[in-house]
Image (cartoon, rainbow, N blue to C red; front, side, top):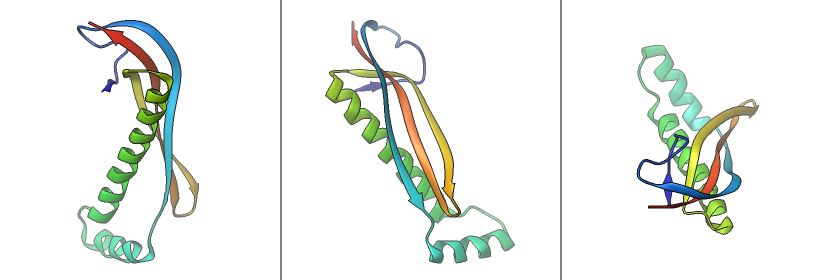
Length: 105
């Protein structure tokens, strides 16, 4: 599966547009991570537990979007975007979305 943030894929021709596909996940913070984040906030630096959690969330949303595109018969997704929104205190949604297409050489 080719995934691109652009409207086209160099060297490929879009022969069919299948529509929007999306994948999301909602993650909540962990109290133990919050304690470490508070300490890190005091001394400065990266909160690596949150960095890892967000990276895993993006990958899961991307995987879900890709699965939906495959079910439609796509071999590529163009115009990939990510969106993040807060659901409630301590929980956020990561959404990956794009346009499922069939491309040829």
